[in-house]
Length: 486
Image (tube, rainbow, N blue to C red):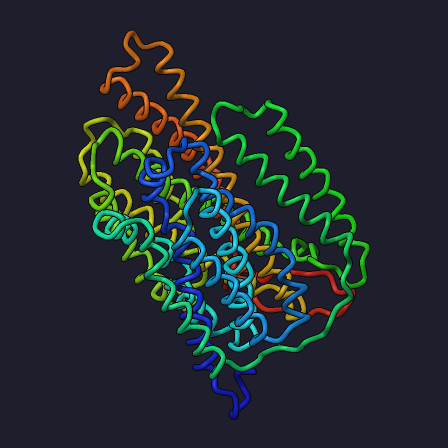
């Protein structure tokens, strides 16, 4: 596609990036506003967390279907459809009179976002040759990582000075512009093959990914616990459905989601690193604001500004990391960054009531830099090792794991934090004392990051196995192999 002299890729790139920026921005835009929403609608932390986990639940259900949709509809149809759904959800959120309506609009936003991200990855894999993908994916990372990273900062400022409804009102004109621009300039890439729709696979996928996310979301409510029936039931259903789903995909001639991508070792390594990174990023972007607005008694705007330097560098460095990936390969980026991530998680496990704000600023900068050096290079390297016919499936799996990993990370870490916090208060002589309440939250945050430190160590070990993956076009029955780093 990129070799066609009559094909202009710029309108395609601009159309996708404009829409993606504001859609993906919403993944973390509400994080700092959660405290405000709790006060406005008189709801508990367990209820308000559904603004985050519900978003990821819908993405987790819809994203696996994206591989099927990408082969069934044109690029224009997919983009305009997903952006329209996202815009309708944003309007509903902006005028929502109750939390239930607000959550409904949020879920529509998630439906649009969940289908949009695979469109971007699949399109760019088709348009650009392998030797340019690191740089191109770095540019994509500027959007995919920068947008959610600056979400807390923008959210804090908007909530402080305009009110929470403007989190959605300000997005509407940009979303409408994206639809108009895409309608006029966006062209189709790839082929519409109209694969056979297997309804049973869709049902199993929905039950599987939805059940896992739902179970962990209930666990994140704190008082439920992982052994509660409402947690165990969806988790068991989800795991069983996923097992049947995998076996069915292996038997189908045209699988909805081809799990054979895991035969390619570098794709599997990339997936493991991706899961750990997403859990670290999503949990930090929720736990840290709670910590700063609680024990440190900072305003939403101040908390957002503290996260700003790391957020800016995260986005700005992504294209740089892409170029370095093209030049040096994945190992020289990912292994040192995994070590830095491990050190940062340990540092956050030592947070106190009187921790210096500068320590948080510097640590968050290092966290976001390590994420930019791992996430897109690992993802690009993993996808590079796949043959073209597996691109839609590889991107669908990667993007399915983002909301699923995020939901699991957020729910598990919030559950750990609230459980530890309650245990601390149960042992306190005066649990209603403000200092005791602050210390209880700090105790929960410390334990969260101690667990995250353990995950980071696993990520560091996994990173040692990464090698440079070269594109393959194997024969139909050719066993996949992955090239080692030069």
